[in-house]
Length: 143
Image (cartoon, rainbow, N blue to C red; front, top):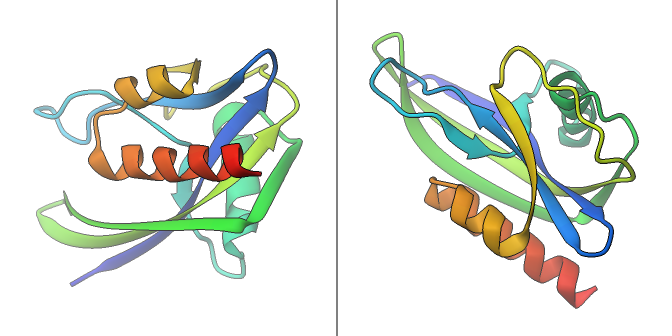
């Protein structure tokens, strides 16, 4: 079975309140719906997970001044279909703080939004993503 490894970031901004950046992804197929999720992407040869996060967040959002929290790492695993094949995917997420809320999304995404914790949690459809956000928010609050 083919495998994929990716890395992503729970991008946060501290202002009057903590807000999280979500990107609107198109559905994976004509039948699937659009969904809100975190910036993420494939780990390229020679990259660390954190290198991938810096590159992917910059490519997908234009944000290039991240402070990554290396002590927070949360992995998710799932299966998906691609070109008639079942793929096993692992994604490692870190928290990344941005000093800016200015975003220029790539053509891969349909929109972006900054939301406080509860609204971000409500906006997300995937259980794995919600679990990552719950853990990240808990980590941030305890710090």
